Image 1: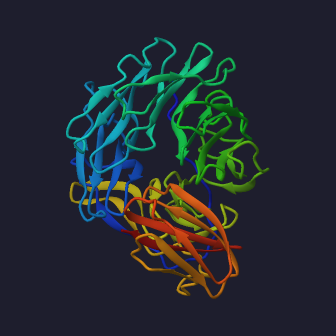
Image 2 (image 1 turned 90 degrees about the vertical axis):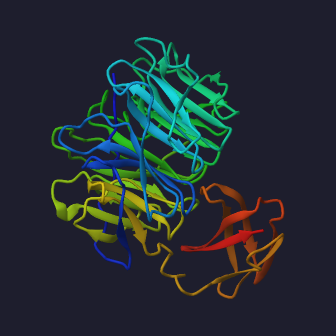
Length: 447
C-alpha cells in the first residue's frame, strides 16, 4: 500500500517585511511542471525534482538544475529504465552527483539510481535490495556526503529494510531497525536529515532515528498516531530538524482528506525527538524548511482553497510567531542555504516562463540587521580569526559549511575572542552568532 504524503504547514501572521521572490525559469518542456523538492549545494548550485501539476497527474521522471544561482536552469530526465516508476526523492551532494529512489506505485519494491554526470545518465545501485514481494517498498535514499549514505523502506519481516554505504553506493550493507508493531510502515519522502542524523516517520506515529549515518537506530514516540492519514485516518504530519537536537512536527489529529481541512499544531523538540512539546495551534497547509543551523523557519503555501491564503512567511523563534513575506501567490516547497539565499518551487507556463522562485531579501533578525554587531577578522583567513562585539557580552557561535552542516560550536564571552580554524578545508563558511533572541550570520572565506 502506498502512501505519498502531503507536505503541510501553518498560517502566518499578518505583518509584512521587506522581502520578496524573484521568478526564475525552470525550463521544463511541458507546462504545469511543479517542483516538489529542492536540494541546495551552494549559492550557485541547486537541484529540483519535478512532478506533474496538471489535472492529469502524469508520472514524471524529470529534474532541473542550476549552477549559476538560478540565472539559468537546465532540465533533464531521470532514466531509471522504466517510465512507469515513480521517483520518490532526490539527494544531491554536488553539481554532478545525485541519487534518486524509484518505486512502482502499485507494487512498491524499489531501486536506487545514481548520476555522476549531472543527470545525463543514471546507473542502478544495490540491485538486490527492496525486492521482497508484498513487503519491500523503498521510502527514501539520502547521502550525507560523497561516500556515506543510506536507503530505507517498508518492513521486511519484523524490521524496516535499511542499507548503508561508505563508498558512494558501490557496496551496501544491511542495517537493522528496532522491531515494528503490526501494520507499521513508512511514507515515501517523509524523512529529514541534519548533520550525521536522519529521522523517518511511520503509519503508527513513530519516528526512527539514526545519529551515525544509518548504522544504528532508535525508535521514538511522537504526538501523532500516524504521519500519513492512512492507518489513523485523521492523523497526519511532517517532520523537520535543523540540527541533531532541534526540530518540529507540524501535524493534525482531526485532518479530513476529503475536505482538506484540519487544526494543525507545531510540536517542538530540543533533544532530537526523545520528547515533544504539547504544541502550538495553527490552521492551514504549509510547506516549510529551516535556515540550516538556526531556529528560523520559512513557510510557503500551495494547498489552499482561496488565492488570498497563498503566499509565504517566516519565523525567527522556531514557529511561535510568524511574519508574512507576501500573500496571494501560490508557492511550492522552499529550501534555504542561509538567511539571504533560498528558493521555492512553482509551476511553469511553458519552457520560457516561470517554474521556480528565488528569495530576494534577508531573514536576519531585525534587532541585529544593519548593526554589524560582530566583527570577524581577517576575512579571508588562513588559520586564526578574531571575533569581537561591542554590543554583546556572551553569545553562542556555530560554524556551518555550505551544506548547512554544523562544523563546530562554542560558547564565547568578553569583548574579543580568537578561534583557530586551520583544520578546516579551504572554502566558504558561515559564522552564526546568537545571543538571547538575537542572531547574526557572517560569511567567512577560509584560504
